[in-house]
Length: 80
Image 1 (cartoon, helix red, strand yellow):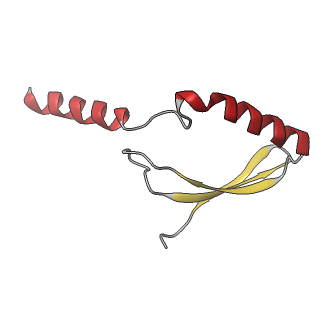
Image 2 (image 1 turned 180 degrees about the vertical axis):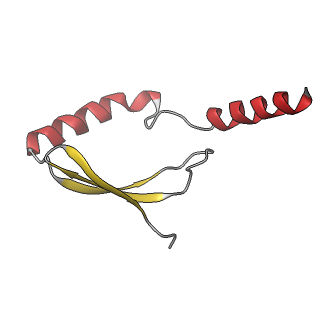
């Protein structure tokens, strides 16, 4: 009985380490950035992502390629 309880606690703590990609006060900045991005009219691009949190995927860098508005590929990058 103790093992399922510890597993549930571990899962809860892992989930609590992940949060929204923006802090509560950054929503205006996000809206401004989205408007600027839309004004540029680019629907094909490649970005590099890095998740910084206390969660399973923390510290993993990856590139995401978007073509014509749809994800065309995503690859993890090797640690530098």
